[in-house]
Image 1: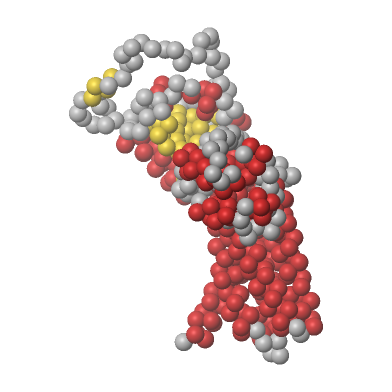
Image 2 (image 1 turned 135 degrees about the vertical axis):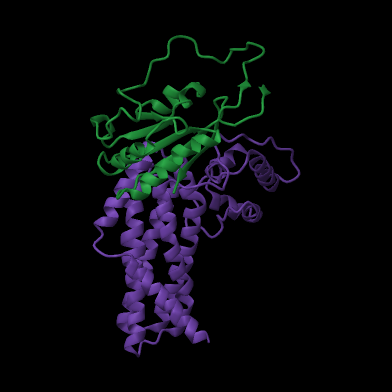
Length: 263
Length: 158
């Protein structure tokens, strides 16, 4: 059993598909992850399970890997004390969680944007350009840049979980570039496919950050680091050169527009 | 522990270890982590050099007596001020000084350590009022200490 603790989760799920379902029962969604190189032991550690939950999960995984055998469940060394799931984030982490709210509202609107999109009209083209502007300016330059340029520097950037986040950001940028290329060519199908792929990627990405990465980071930041991080975030927000409220107004107007269309 | 009725803040309690068991106590002299003087809220200047950009503790007077490992666990590397929200006079001055920490000394973080007794919450209220009137926001944490020295609650406040 010990050898599996040091293997990538995707590899384990491929060999023992039942484990995907077991992890899901503990709200651990590794199945859709694009990379899946996180080690089993790290996954168990960072999901902030109680000791009882962890033992139960490990027992079920051991049973799936070695059916019918009586396996000794290995103890996993905790890097930090596990806190209950309900807690208040430190202010800089809370800032990032709050920024996710607007991004989630945007990705919630993407199916309607795709349906509504008519590239023959100036309004249709502008809607795609405005959506891309929100992604590039708010989601990427305003939000992801704070993670990449500031937050991730406080941790080991070579750790699997942070590498996954970088990879997600890169893939998201690829989808957005493809949307703009398709807009130039007037290819509605490609716009739709790439926006929907972006939506799927970001939905999983935000879930990973809100449920795993941020709580884990929050737990490992010292009080002094929280203060420094908050100052750096505040400085970065001041220097961004645009008002994030502009994008909130865009979302409010778009939500209102689609609501009117449904009536 | 024996308890008597009365105001929770001044309620008489005794929780001396009946067995006299001190097996888990450190031996030898423990170095003080205090790095400044003065510390009483009426006496301090909020813009003294040791507050500039510092991680500051605002501690209710009783906390350091209740917390066995106060110096190493909380005071180390931080600047401090102490106050009693129940007994101290002219607390509006405290509010101004806390605001000056935020805006003028540009402190990095503020950790407010209070006892579990209800009157101690007055210190946290004072901080929240000062924070609202300040232009600059500072990450602020509230730590509630039990009368027997255990940490009952520790969280960042809005």
